[in-house]
Image (cartoon, rainbow, N blue to C red; front, top):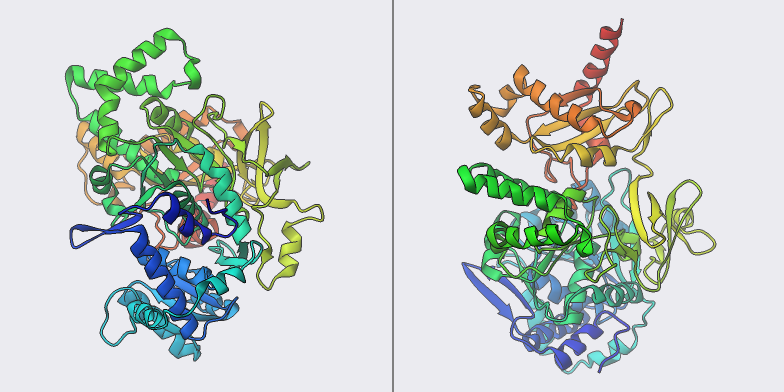
Length: 593
């Protein structure tokens, strides 16, 4: 059997061990288009030969700027197995970041998905007189199509790709991933074949043997979904791409996958929709729903709640939770969550419902997994990100920062040895910038981002993420950001859940108009404030939110408030709502006089 030392070795293994009719699949014009292992590998080889014919050499940079689709994977493998370096670019990147990445990496070719992205790239190339070619996945008039490269490769079928593969070593550069740049200039993270292979092998042990089909919707441009995809190839799991973020619910019902990867934000939305539907029930059905929900919220792993609880849970699973599972396709074995902290209540209720959520932790610089919860007894603990994966070492620095060392740690930042030296010390430990602690000698708990912790004017430190996660447990709070650096007290910018508020207003006989008008309604302000006060009890007086500002529009990637992995862009949000924040604190000052 093929030994996996470079990522493209996965293709040979897939052919030997899992040859199947649906190695990847995507929906087009209402029909699922499936790629067999043989067809997929044939297309990959043609792309490699096409790139060679175009003069692309080892270590040249080739970019992909596209949402998830099979062509993304085909071009990714095609680029890597002839020795070039793949540069993934988020479709939502701002023009300034696009220009920086193309110039810094000296990209030769860019694959884009559609006309909108082609026009975006073409504008950059014309303005900057940049010398790169653009190929489109969609058929566009007057635009080079990626199939032309495939055809060129097929004409050069005599090129022996094994010669090129043999030149690639495990420590060679596989990909150059530019961080989303929540602050400052993007940094190019250099990841090798060995970085990714080590992470694939160490993470693959989490999955049950009969896990055979997955739904994918997180961006492949991010290392989390990309590593998981390589792991699916290693395990022989068929990958079905969701049509869009809006169609996930329908795609789950149709594909009936064994699992998927996600970020907490999406699980929060699933949970809120379930609770909303439960709230619409009446009589005994409503009572049973909330009985099961409360039972789930108190779930403990490995039968720690005792026989009576487990007996009740069996009934809840037959009467209520089976409907939850059906809503997600009915075959879920595991959901992997990363990118941000998962609310413990979500983890508990999904585990109780027979859909375990395995929360993990890592960064782009660590390929990405460092720690992750598992399915086996003793391999998971609520409020933690699980045990450290094999061959990786984690330790906590004196100031609480999490340090990591292992084969998953990047080579460094591209063209920035100064920045590399700042984060990788002389002992080889990568400084994550996250604060954490080891629980029970084996599980890692993340308490906050080192850079996000701020100090109030009174000298007290505030860890905003911990507060935000607690406040978001309220069904009336959709999004929240805790602020207060160098101020006398913490405050919060809040996006209410307008769906929940609408129903509450109906119950209270309050006339509901637009979101902009509703956030000015005093009874709504009082309602949200009462929710904040309810959760404030869990925190010390110095860290409790004392004032709030309600906002009318949801934060998004397109709006610039969220990163592609749906984390808060704190500086961008503060800048956007600068006037509201200044008014909040100046009013508070006047009240004190």
